[in-house]
Length: 340
Image 1 (cartoon, rainbow, N blue to C red):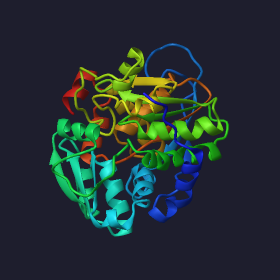
Image 2: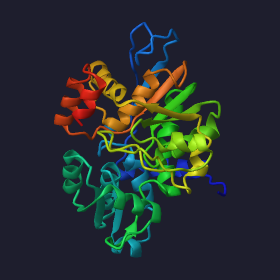
Image 3: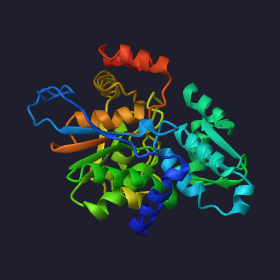
Image 4: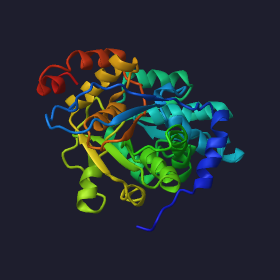
């Protein structure tokens, strides 16, 4: 694949325009940890990382997707906006595009995976978008082909667009401004747009900072692809409560941006739930499953010691589902899976 580059100037331009689209500068808070290591239960002595949380849950739509979505929509010419915009999503990108479309007065429709939680569907509807439900496989084919015969208007790809990635990258600028000596950043991998953006910003300004993907064990295509040295499908994919991360494959077009990450940290579902509960207890922040992956990866120590930022990418999870998950997090792994 040819090289693909997201210029720092494009990221800074997105940052300058972010506020007009409704995105806020989210806080970076320190997560107070117990004095002993081994949160993930390994029992091995190691240095406890100094963990910080980048709270994208506080965005107006409850996730980072507002950053990239508005950066695309604001650059569309008027004649394209007249035809409306659409996207495909597990829920958060749909909210981002719907929010951005409302800002510029454009119609919006979204193809939403039938695994999307009710919380996300209700939020999309409140933003005035037309919802078209589809199977996960149809949505993923649309992501790969950038096209669907069922949709009309301008397609805002939820991650495979340099403008969307540049918008996501503004979170990286904020992390570096708030924590200039950050050693590692961990973020969940869905399609890779958030990680590609973080890497683009950080590589230019602090190249020694390590960027890690976090993936659930049920859907870890980047880990498999890094092992193979090329984009591959994750053959044992299955749906879980981690609906905002973990696709079936890495798109070939995204591979040049993801291949040079420091690695992918694959997290068991029970560790994701424990991380979600731990953060709720310590910070009163509700993290959805994808965000829980990043937190669990940082807590487990595999991103290394030093100052580690976990990007809490979103908090759009049904409260009943959240309560059932964290209420069962001390149960055996098999019973947590059975409650999904």
